[in-house]
Amino acid sequence: MKRTFFSMLTASGIFMLCFASCKKEQDFTYYSESAAIRTPEANGVTAAATLDRIDEIVKDLATSNYSLSFSKTYSSYGITRTAYGSASYLAFVSPDAVKLPSELRNIQKYVPIWKRPNFILPTCPDMIFDPLRLQKVRELLAKADPAQFSGLREVAFVNGGGFLATDKVLGQYANLKTDVMDGLLKDLGGAKFLILNEPGTLNREFGRSFYGYANINDIVFKPYRKNWKDIFKPTLKGCYDPIILSVIKERLAKINPAAYGGLNVTTLAENKNIAIMY
Image (cartoon, rainbow, N blue to C red):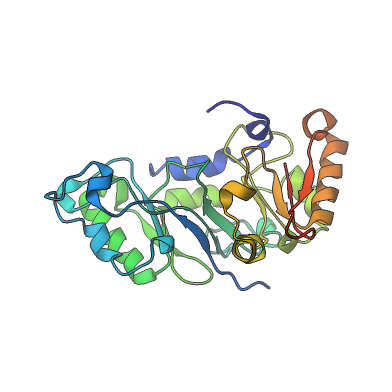
């Protein structure tokens, strides 16, 4: 992965470790972009191949309601592709669900869980917005590859469904600590912004991949028919309230002008009360 200005700013080595280790006051609703194709032929598998068990489990769900990624197929168990459902999504879990330390639970009212097209984590099998289907997928995976998947358990989203993770994955969240960014953001209100960083080298300002919990599903994506590619450019640093983002930009530039002096805050053409910082 080429080291861009964006990756220089990022600091979610811990978050990458989380997912690489298994290979793979708002009412939240979800947004995702459907991209996976459910026909075996479109994924290099003939129609005569083994019945796909994942397709069977999710057969009456919209592809926007699940996103599953695998490092390889397990054809003898009916997993004939390495990707199912949407290419991206944004959802939220409670800080208790991922065992954030108490100092961060007071800061992060919700923890974002996401995938976006220009940034694909080698994730654990990802998510389904239906807890019963998620349980069925977990049980199937445990049979297909016990060494990798037997420790998976469901972690609930705040508004139904969830994602799959091992205790080792969740333990990475428990080891997170407050950092310089938390000090810069403490008086700004997490519901007013969402900062999501590409995994990279930790630096003195950023100690994790997520800050804030603005529900941009309902604020940006749905009302203005935007998607992740429109909003989260490769150099993105944040999204939502332009006043809050401008304050963040100024504070970052003050403590490290060489790294952050070039940040921009740009409002959406459709609504000047919504902006991105990059």
